[in-house]
Image (tube, rainbow, N blue to C red; front, side, top):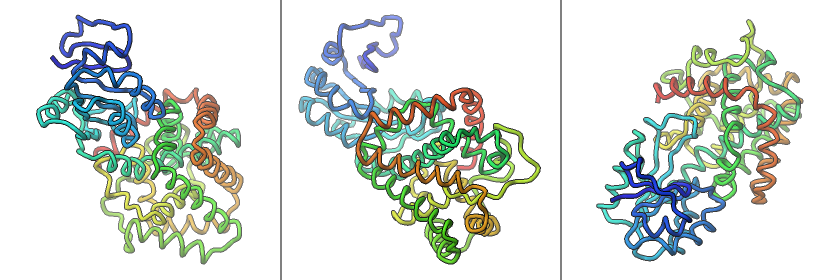
Length: 393
């Protein structure tokens, strides 16, 4: 009989009415045929070292951390050699319906029969299973999640530092701004460790977050200095590398009606031009790192698809891109906001580079508390946005 353990609970599959609560994780490990470690990435080594040696002979173990290389290394170090290792990771947040979402499945050390069993168990999610190695998983999650999270964390930090609720300010309502506000709120409404483990423990993620901060800083300096020719050349070179040299509006991930539909505030009659430093830096970062975001769509999270959608929308509309470049050079409307955003991007990068979980938690939770009153509405609207974007991808 297959047994499942999650967060210390134990139950035979299909016999929920016969639940037994065991005294500790060692007893769970001794009696379970399938054990799933659902703990923070930071804690996986310590937890597996404590309970792994007690694992039942021939059992299957896996985990749901966002960093698979350290997870697999912990299993290999602390599990008996006869234990099979099949890991997984749902590539979406806790507030998203798993149906149709990507779920990474990693067969590291197991028989085909055991692999089939695990696939059967997780089939209840109705997710789109993607077969990867631990290394492939970590590289893809870094490419699709790490910088995306850094961008929205930096936005929230900047608005917090300026004591702003952006949806109450006309220049942050409507169009692309709706995506920014809603996804920022969605990320801060989750627990800090959901993002900290991926950012700090994933080697590729550190590099990418550092590059994003550098891209933000360098582009902002070009805007401040009025270096139009250099700014335009850099922006267009990055755009051509990521989206192609011949921009087209065909098959855009997001349409105008979608962008305007999901607003937390009243949409003004006239849109305030924005230099969209966060978006320009995102594409610059992808270009500098040689990342082609479309390559990983099968493993992409909903926020990443929305983020890619708005960057694509900007760079594949020549008139809008020209307006953004002009605004960056000539318009001071967003200067103070951009200054705080630059500080924020560098701050998050430093926090990740230093591997400082305590600082990450403190920074995240202070800002999360500030935006807390709007989380219910943002979650509702965010789910609607995700449903729409899924129809296009």
